[in-house]
Image 1 (cartoon, helix red, strand yellow):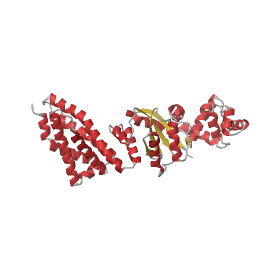
Image 2 (cartoon, rainbow, N blue to C red; image 1 turned 90 degrees about the horizontal axis):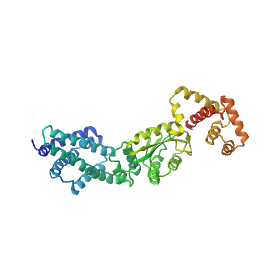
Image 3 (cartoon, rainbow, N blue to C red; image 1 turned 180 degrees about the vertical axis):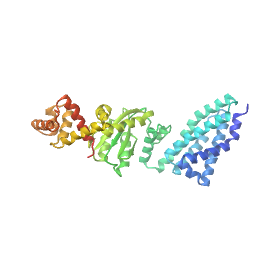
Image 4 (cartoon, one colour; image 1 turned 45 degrees about the horizontal axis):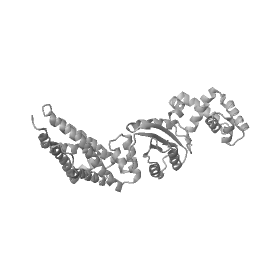
Length: 380
């Protein structure tokens, strides 16, 4: 059996060159860096050093020392100073880990010393985490000096949604921690609020420690730590800054599955009512009927016809909305509408005339509440 450590040391330069080629092929920021001879040489030197240092430390079963961690951190700082994106910084760590593990197992083959193989993989697993943290810490500390706060917040939100291993370090650089559970909130507005977009992201973070990012068209994704501030308070602050009526959808999710929670919240927001001052943070329980019919064109068209009929009466959609929100209590509804109870009765009677459906019947509740929800989700 040959020496696995010695074999990896002999292959260090060849493996390092292959790694630089892979970086340039897979990651645009590294492609740009590798195109410059000096940048390419620096990347190669670092890749060779990492491999030789790994073999040296593993032979003696020694951890990465402070000087090595500081050097790795300086590489991270250099990447940030050269304008590498956070996504590039995350991607290179994943690619590097995959390549190193492949190199170890490729060198081991079928006949090498099992003890050396296990020693190498165990060392790389434990010390790789420390090296990754040092790299990201250096990168993020430098980035904090060069990138505006709103962009750094978006980076955190994107990393959380991707369940990236670097999310904890990005959170640390912003002075927060990653939580086990969140409430994913999607706010849909008529259009993205221009120069207010960054202000809204920063406000949500500064006041409520909420990572957020804008998606087109006119859609904000916010990740509210579960059990913290009341979600409705945060949502109202966002909608007030955004201006115009917005639709809100929410879904709970663990930190490891936030993309799925956002997908649910997005579907809820697509059928939730648009409001200038949100009365609720809508989830599946509040809009399950609307979710059920939203993707059935025949039902949606039929409800649309009812909405058009209601437009022929005096504020009938708003009247029915408050009527059902107040559990069909005439006096409470009339008070909310600022009208006399007899005026409310007239409007409910007008609904019966126009639609042929009694709003106070079980059938009327099922049909007309769905029609109202459809009307309220339309822009404007």
